[in-house]
Image 1: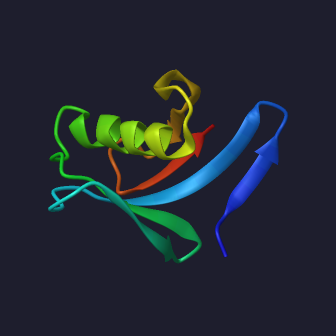
Image 2: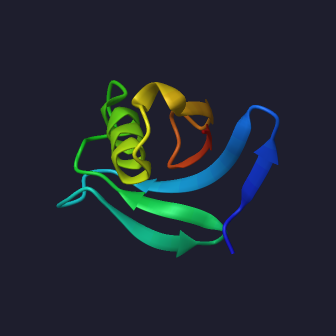
Length: 81
């Protein structure tokens, strides 16, 4: 089951990223986290930007509605949506 927390500001979603993948996609659940694969390399924030773009496109919301609240330099992240 996915680790999703509802707050007054939105929801907090725990994710696991797989940078350097062959294509951008949502893989599925991984240890309570949503696992995402992105083609971008994990350098200079490129993979983080790709994760935000993928989720924004999938959820049909603006990229500015998604914020990384922890894990900017880790594969495991928490996002506020």
